[in-house]
Length: 205
Ligand code: 5GP
Image 1 (cartoon, protein in one colour):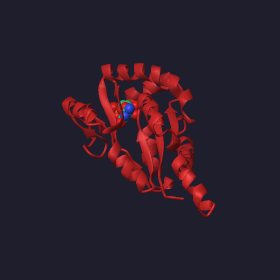
Image 2: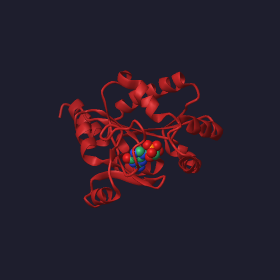
Image 3: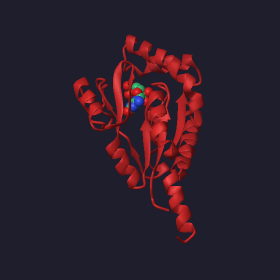
């Protein structure tokens, strides 16, 4: 079978622990490419350009939209966020598992465009109360931003049904085990084109 990659989409409210899970999974899920999104939001303390996000202004982002650079993009919490197509395509061609940390709107668009390559997982806290507690505890955002994120979470939670898997991040070690299992399964997902190629090869054609 041609060594083509696949995609794992991870979504869920800010503060549910998505980045922590990806970081903690590290080399336990094999070689993967984390898709670095482009955003117009300001960097948080400790975030670095080109590592956490590509931080750009609104004009640059809108020029990239017009140039067709994005596989998907959306407005979240009043800022633009988008996934660039080119690095994703290259990583897929190199046979890698590509991980997207994107919101529910981005998930819907990516599914339409590349659904046969995608496995998706929604990560959340056990309750809304717990999400509020974690966002306050994180201390990286002011009261208005936290309120905005909570309101967004109340909408996002309704999209759970569109995802293949749900991870409730109550006990971090358990959530991590589940995430590793999902990522390993995602790697085995094969697109239609790759399946047809395999069938032909298997038949000796
Ligand atoms: P944060 O500002 O907390 O880093 O991210 C806010 C939300 O934007 C999260 O739900 C995150 O998954 C989402 N997000 C990050 N990058 C992208 C992207 O490229 N596309 C879309 N649609 N959402 C994104």
